[in-house]
Length: 537
Image (cartoon, rainbow, N blue to C red):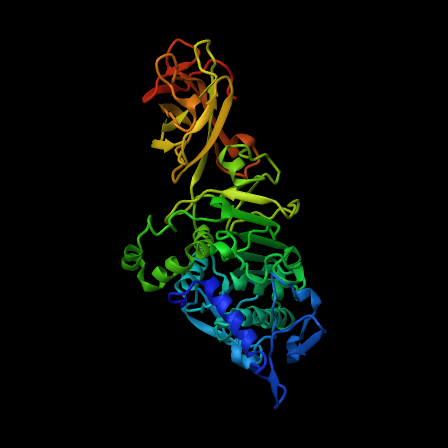
């Protein structure tokens, strides 16, 4: 359960780091498992290399490249194994609600369990100030078991995930060793193929998965759900999750604002595929003015209300991935330089056998041609179901002699098809748009439904005068009409299809009048239908 009270995480981190500095002279007691003497676990500064070993797990060192004056100013060793007390709890369709404890020290615990090495294994790792009892962990494992009869293993490291944050980040290294040893033990003694293992980690859990992956030969996949930023952003690959940790590393960024702006997640692309829903920063529905906390408390309980208050954007990555497990709606994301380019429709085409698009979530497509470092953008809704269908709407503007060179204003469209109607899609949700006659302009809009090929469009136009832009003030001799030659609508449907006609559907619609364009006065609508004479663009 997320327990932060009235403190935000940055406040906690800052305060606890100060505490570490203050206590370093006295020392934090570290009761070594292999030693009877008391060791002092003080913040490490880059003067000399230090190493500690943990029995059969291996060793951990702290060298100069684990230190950075700004990004990682303090380093400590993990707490003792018996304090963190990492546990592995198995769920299958035979025991979906009552977990079975798997212990590598007890061969009998594995033999008597429902673990089946021939099936895929999904391993869930929680993050900072969290436990395996959190509602999201239960929901994710239930969705997995609904999808297929897999081995679902939940990693319990609650003994090391609580404050101090600096200490929790250190503990992830030891937990990573525990996870790696667990998987390698099952491989060597029970025939588990690491390629069939998929680790899903949230926040600090994402980096924990990375530490495990670097010690497992040919691990199948790691999914990082909004990997934690503090102590990892700006650091080298050896300190965090990176592409070398598994055959496929996919990452969902939902809280990528700077920690200074209360963003808890990383902004840098660190996987083979990095997804940025809604630009990876502010998620719809996380503004408390949109979703009042008392309403969330009534609908979803105190735990979820606490998450919304403290880390709504940060936990949205969990919700999106969990929904993707059994959702029939495809989470199709588009590779693009910026989110602004994406919403302007500049990166919308999903070319056959290319890396221009990718699926976010469980069904994320494995493509050996993926080049790390690119960002994939997608727009989602503010509440479940979060998945949205994306429509690219392109206005082909005419330029008759009486038209102004440019106009600015607001636009909405209603789409009609054989299967249904989508009403009042807002093309200008962030304010007026400036349009130049004689050019084309694209907008990406979303809706939960796929209604098929568009047959008819109602287009609404409203001119906007901005007193701060004298040239936009239009009266008497000025023409505030918008002249539209045609409207094209493109929807990405199935990027796994081999035929481009199955990947995308295209509709071109023209004015119902006899003219080659529609003359639309401010605050009026025009109708466009799909009986254009020329070929479909």
